[in-house]
Image 1: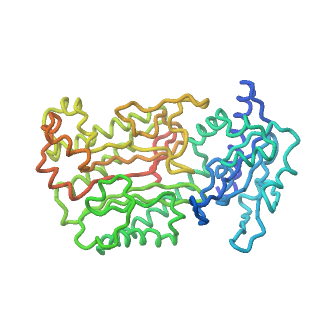
Image 2: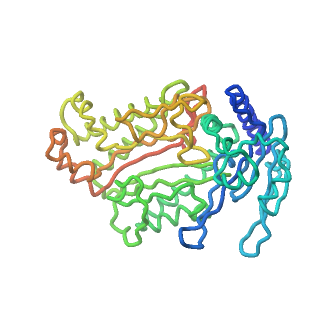
Image 3: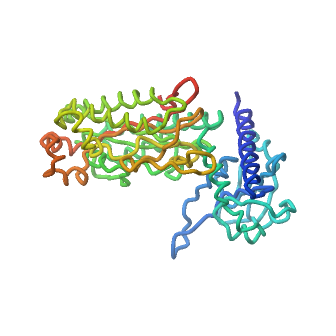
Length: 440
């Protein structure tokens, strides 16, 4: 199916979700006759006039692939959505919006020179909900404060963004294709003994990206820095002689994200560590096979800990009987994070803790408190699967003299700690017939 057809079906789906949301709210005594979705406000740094890089609000981007502030979409049940395209007269910054036929034909376009002009085009009713950051603007437009970012509406939309349309899946698939191209370039830079900075640049250059085009800040960790889960720096003076690269980097296509992690170990790396990289890749693929409609996502978390413990035992990093190791939660010392999260218009997409579309929360249990998704897997869900095994001094060192520490072979840990850690992350689509790995 061509892009225009995919997008037309997508917009029809979003309209249906909004209509159902308004119907449900009406039954609960909250009557909305329209919703105005605002793309966001461009900000500046505190006590400065430098602009912060702008990122469109997710619920606006669900309608339109436009990365611009002050844009609006008006939804009214039974009517074609209206795109209020704000293009200010400006000689300081480029303001052009390129209107592409494949998405434009799904909207009535109204051109404005200032967002305040939308007042003349809103329906006469003031039962208009508002979604967006600029609630002061909404109030100036006469939209009632109790319908601004109305929680029940937001919860409903967040919940259904968890299941992707064919258009959304194709955008995430393309974002994966782009990211794999970047990861290959990053590996080549690592093989050439490039620095973290060199590897980062290679990833961006492979897709002719700027840093702002990335869905998140690339994590490029050589050796011990791979044990810092969200390592944020790019060292220029480290590269030759490095043994391990952990790179977590993605791309965006029309606002939709990919989120991929790979770990590479040179032949000069410790043979145990090299073997664990292979085992982690196998574990990731094993977990993908367990992703099925109707299964609680937390079962993947539990299976991941079982798999990490298997690796630790097979490499004799931990010792003792399996039941005692499980009771001691020994795997959490080496695998402290959640197995994954919803993926879409945001890297950590919304609605991960909702048990229903009315916002009833289902937070993860305390022993897996960093898990970002605790729903049953449903047809159309896209999420990451990203098991890891790290040698993190801040977690391990306090256990050296404890009872739990007696279960750990510290000589092996000390030998592997300079290598940092391992993570392998793929992006997975769940369907009625099984899981589809969008990364492989």
